[in-house]
Length: 217
Ligand code: AMP
Image 1 (cartoon, rainbow, N blue to C red):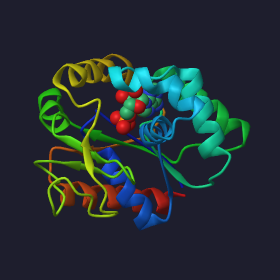
Image 2 (image 1 turned 90 degrees about the horizontal axis):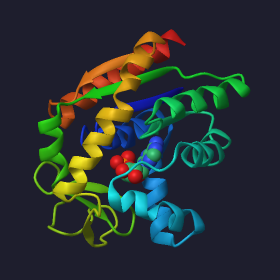
Image 3 (image 1 turned 30 degrees about the vertical axis):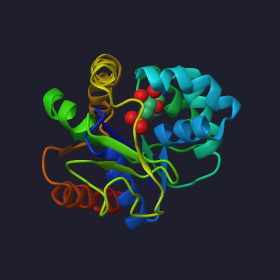
Image 4 (image 1 turned 120 degrees about the vertical axis):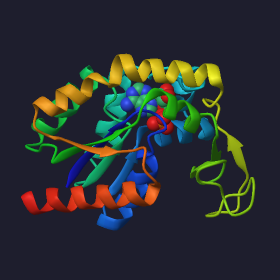
């Protein structure tokens, strides 16, 4: 099963991708996590992408697609791509990379959320400095403030969570990523989930969609 999770920053697609990957035994491939880990680990890739992440700007398409090709498509037969593609050129590159291997996407799940809702959600995000797990101070707090439930490490405010950076990320999303909704609708691949609902309701709806895609296979 090869899936793309699409949606505005803050729509909860990362949380859903992690949960569904576990539930259906798929690889959870988040380009945001790959880039953040590269920055934290001080690799060459990290040095290249740091300024983009800190500024809330998209990493160039070519580089992003190369990273996905090498770290995901070549390694994993079944996956959820979380945060990729984010532009039309990336979507075309993904299609080319899959086609070259005689493969194709099974579906694109679109987590639909308006601009204002996204703004509220994004300005309270914290991330574990150790394992990379995401939390929200209001909507998904850890059991103990400032401490990761999973590994006990310290939680830090994401460098891309200031109001100014969030505004820029949402603008980037609206200009560059939202056109993918039409693109994947025309390809007959898009399934929409209302992301304004509670995480449990969104999980339920997402699970049903993935099951129906599996039945279609
Ligand atoms: P995320 O955690 O998915 O919100 O991603 C965090 C940051 O990583 C984004 O604001 C971008 O700077 C970068 N990034 C993640 N995925 C992509 C992508 N597909 N294309 C370009 N930049 C990306």
